[in-house]
Length: 274
Image (tube, rainbow, N blue to C red; front, top):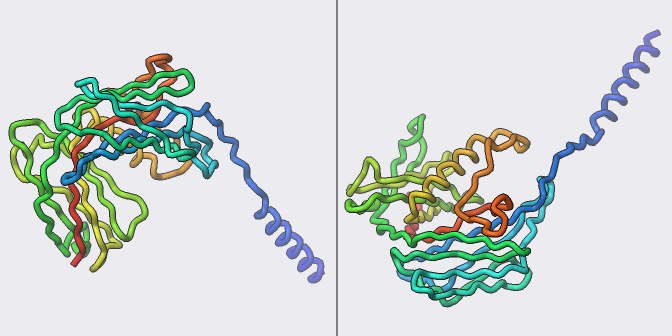
């Protein structure tokens, strides 16, 4: 009887192990591909800003490891003086490059993308940004008082309502972190960006990038960062809504593109953690 019981236990164990090897297939609906336009014109202080890149791709299935690029589009930007800047693709990459762009603070620019019989347009203004002045480190930050925090400072312009995108790139993380701020409570005063990470240690490097942005782009990024934060719990969680940018399909309004056309002056500051 004991042998029979042992035999039955062995059979149950084998069946259990076999069941663990079953492949669970998740049936996800895939929407038709939609054009994605990454059109961030960035004029770094101290450079001519003549070389700019606009990236075109399409959406794809959740499990597809390859993002399809768009190679058959017409892309150009016109400024308010009717100067046209053509963006030509580096073959097969979806990267459309212009080498004679002329950035001017306060100038209005209009993007045009023609793809598969649809014409997409967007208009924005090139927004200035102040210089990053300095950075300081605090080794007693965070909730527990034992995390490293680094602040960088810049002077806000007191005569205008200003909006900023802050980008943090580090030597110990793969992807950058972003934040958006405005001068509602700091009009004309010194402002700062703050970075903290529990994995940060001495000799790590941080690159702070400050972007001047429009109020419309500030609102867009505020919503986008909120959606990204609320959707961080599960890869299968549905975002609350599709975040639409300022790019309009003039041919078919409902066939909108994802992405945003914006122009920013930017300043960079490198810091080595002490």
